Image (cartoon, rainbow over all chains, first blue to last red):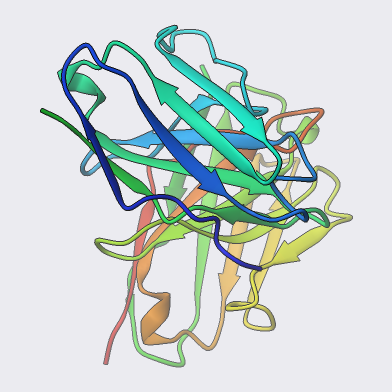
Length: 110
Length: 119
């Protein structure tokens, strides 16, 4: 069971786009379309913002989108706003009722 | 409204035991798998354990295998995590999380309960 790899931090200006990558293996991200992305604000529980690689729950802005290519999933946030700042995590199902999580990425909006 | 309420966290000595609970409401608990995820202070998320809707299938992270046991009571709408032989590095906020029905992505989270293992 290995953790998924995410960049430790990314930053972008208001109005720009950023992409956060999440790299796993052929046994998790590459095998299953069950990648979820979460946003965590300080002192709060994570909140899911993308599931099944690219599906957006109701209430999540269209600015958030997800994709996958091979063993790497990506979260793109377009039209960055100040309230997008926070920590972002990915997770992937890995079979046999096992999951893997990424180490987290801190997003700064400058 | 989907709600998951964590409880049971406490300060415990190394080698001690603790049982965490997660009470759910607002959805049919019988239909959903559940997982536990933890977050050490100032660090990232780590998957701990998972259980399918009928308790037929359970998974554990290597770091807790043989020490933790996940269970559920569908009649009472509760998920549990029995933690034995606790170590200092088990110190973390523990969250219960729902698995989306029909798949293996995860959606709603409890508010978390803090476990501190310290002598």
